Amino acid sequence: MNDNNRHPDAKSAIDAANRLNPELNAFLSVYDEVAPKGEGPLKGMPIAVKDNICTKGRRTTCGSRILGDFEPQYDATAVERLENAGAVIIGKTNMDEFAMGSSNENSAFGPVKNPWDVERVPGGSSGGSAAAVASGIVRAALGSETGGSVRQPASFCGVFGLKPTYGRISRYGLVAFASSLDQIGVFGRSAEDIAAVLTTIAGRDENDATSADVEVPDYVFALGKPIEGKRIGVPRALFGEGLDSDVQSSVETALDGLKSKGAEIVDIELPYSKYAIAVYYIIATAEASSNLARYDGVRYGFRAEDAHELREMYFKTRKEGFGPEVKRRIMLGTYVLSSGYYDAYYAKAQKVRTLLKKDFSTAFQDCDVIATPTSPTTAFRLGEKSDDPLAMYLSDIYTASANLAGIPGLSVPCGTTDDGLPVGLQLLGPNWSEDLLLNIASVYEKAFPVEGEPGIKA
Image 1: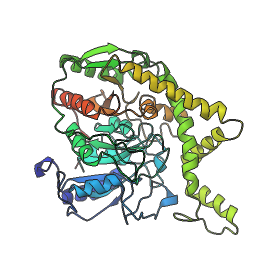
Image 2: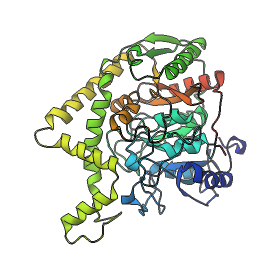
Image 3: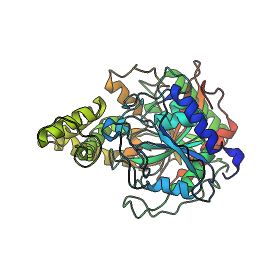
């Protein structure tokens, strides 16, 4: 990846970000530094970083008014490792507030536009990073995932998006939403782009007790190997109501393509996956209710004015600082944790989460990876689902289960619909199988390049 012809230089990327941002609104901050801070395999590679990942002395807003002027005192471990390897962080990308959303319309700084069609959403919550990669401003970007926030926007924007195994990438410096689900993920224009970044940032970090002390392979070296004999499990029962026919057609064509490269397609069952959205929105909101309690106007971030006593200051700060979706999730989470409801909701959700993990363990005895659509639809129009939270939440129906189980997932561009919108194929694997997922993606990518390109590009 140190071949300068593989990616634009930092100055070109910064120029493109400044030129395209008025139309895309993908960046909340664009930097002017072009010189690498370190020497390494990513030297000179421009990378964008989601604005809930800490950058020392540089604004980190989480897409929220309540952190509008917050500047961390340290870099996230992933940022530090990128810069040590020579990558250049060119800016921070727009996102749904505190990573809560599936469309990037919940940002306090306005929605991101999809480079394929600016009247459509890029997906969320990492829509800014997805748009930055899809438009060609950068070849790779960091996002974060709690229930699909890398893979779903990757699908909507026609790029690759990886959610690694929980513990594969340090969460140190990632602003918390739901700590048992949150992860840093990677977007790329190709499987190789993701592999190069993942090799650099993965691995144990003493600053994050949840990071795993598991050997990190050279993911780039793992690419391009034959996939003959690999068993790809397909849970056909999930290909039902709510799945757009053109999305299903593209995914079925992609499965036929993998079969033509020697993979074996087998039917599997994931019986508890139908409960994934319900379980996810209980556990995630409960953890959000706890994590976001720290934003009270006392220590950092926004503080409401004209409050005459402490309780009033708390109330006004949170009322004025948080947007509607964040308030909704805090209230849901507080409710499911409250006395009299904890056992009925939160405790039961954790039990079903365990059953869902067992589903995957059982399925991986019969197959090497699992394939589904990444999202049941292509990118929808701005405002189309804003007044229907449940419809918005169902955008994560194929992705949330991987976060609950902690397994890795990758969205691979697998075609475009008749109206020219990208479709993503999701590959899920056992823990620590990112090399296998990326290899299958690279084989598919080279054999079946996707036609079409964004209308807005660098």
